[in-house]
Amino acid sequence: MDATALKAMQAPLKEVYRDDASRALITLKARGSLDDQSIACKVETGRALAIAGLHPATGGSGLELCSGDMLLEALVACAGVTLKAVATALEFKLGTATVEAEGDLDFRGTLGVAKDAPVGFRAIRLNFNFDTDETQERIDSLLRLTERYCVVFQTINQKPELTVTAQR
Image (cartoon, rainbow, N blue to C red; front, side, top):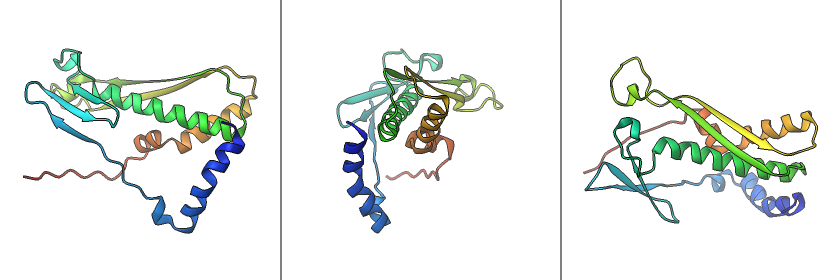
């Protein structure tokens, strides 16, 4: 897809959202069910069933997916798609590209071993590798716009309002 095709595809959507902001608000959903045989959650992805379990550092077997890994994978997926869309819109000559994310966890927090150890990632690093002859100024612009428009990056960066409920 080139910049013209991308802009043509998105133009009607942008017009609708400018005219009626309420039409731009969409609620995405995820659903899972707890496994009755092991400490795992079966997550419905829309394509397949993903079974998440404990990370080996918390006693898991390593056979199930780790939700921390899944968070980083969601970041990589979103950042990669965003980078590609921004590069297309800017007519940026990207060449081959990869996206990597890594995060540091102190498992003492999630296991309740040390109250001063945080639960969750202490740091996350997102790295893009691409082959380009573009100027550094254009590369900086590509990264700035990718960061700005990546939904998962911005969600992690700008803590959203969170609520937790339970029903019987």
